Length: 161
Picture (cartoon, one colour):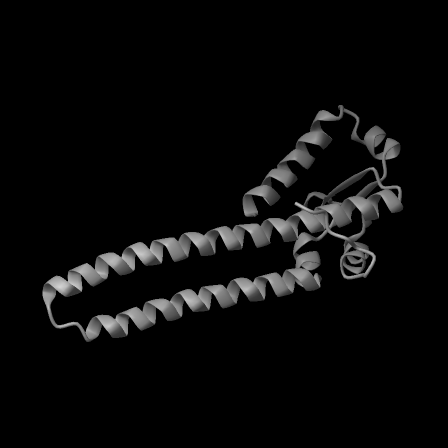
């Protein structure tokens, strides 16, 4: 997710640089808005729920390891211990891969929803370009709260994947 944010910021910067030598003409030709992604994410109810689900799955994974460690301590034979270790490693890898997929899916859903809401709010406010707040030195329209309000409203319908 951090890579996508960095890519977004880089693309926005490249857009501004590549738009021409006279940046003021770009600013006059287009309405520029900005969003504080972290603020939006931390105030988006679905994101809070998704990250709680991720935390719960992570705790389940930790509990699995703790349970297996207790079982391991009760094994007497070195051969049985080795077999047990190998089986636990295989099982843990599967569970960890499942967890990673789940975490990625949830993060992508949250990011996709925020992007969808940002586009909708920008269109509603007739904003042509929306950048990350860290790219804006001065000017622009902060639409972060509008995006939060839209995301948390009953009228927001996430796109189906």
